Length: 385
Image (cartoon, one colour):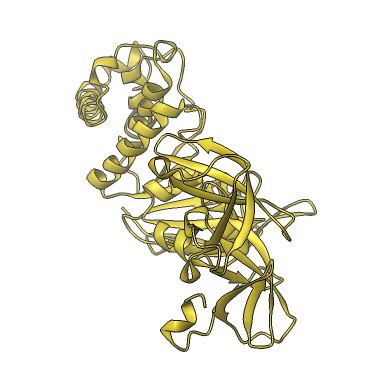
């Protein structure tokens, strides 16, 4: 396997800038997921790594060697496409064997009649067939080897495409939204299977998706790309729990994070909708900021004398083990979303309740979406008074 280094990659299609100064080091054996909204440039970056697209500027280094002048087949990288790209006239075994046949047999040896009479062909084909069996067993599809693609389910087709990639023993695996064609139940099962497969292979996986759930549950590290820019790279816990940009905070997390307006008062504390938040900053009095608060970081308060936002429950969504409540707060144009355990329901639609954020779970951002760190002088600064 190999490390992959992306150095200052820029790419434009005509006048449209698709990728801007992308720098990223992917370690040998790492499962890295490129995540971002549709059209952000993540698939273009994957295709540049594979050699299917060429960058305008920058360098791709695989296993400490530049591959910018190499064709896709010379880079020894396997790519699993969203559509799986299986040959419909071939069996599963034949589909998996395609890369090895192309690599180890010449044009004459691949001919169905002539090839069998060329010395050495039978031995190579026997080795390839044995490799196909081993790969299929590792993926649990050995019973499907004689079937054609039209006889397979979506999950089975996805495993065949993976098998065709694995048999090459490439330096890295590139995957372009491989689970997007699966139904919800199968997608959950296949996420776990892919993660376990990565641990068995100890291979370098570079995976593209717009599904943040896939990114948070599968990746060793997540690289968030929005608008052609790499905004943050980190573990799932870091990206979710410590976003460095407002765009990242808004994109990562379901349900979407609450973003509320705030303003610094004369003491440097933040005020929002007539409540003072005990977070001190170095902002000048009157300077506006944005507060981002995840729905699970809001609590319902029973004591109406405590600092809180008062609001009416507009809507409640049942999600099985949890529920979402949409609260209309006076002084705020948008509703606040909170999440809570279904067994702890203490209010109903149209009830007036008090809510407030857990102070050390609030993210502050300036007008350009950059993270602002609060000044914490004493532990009491994190408590409502």
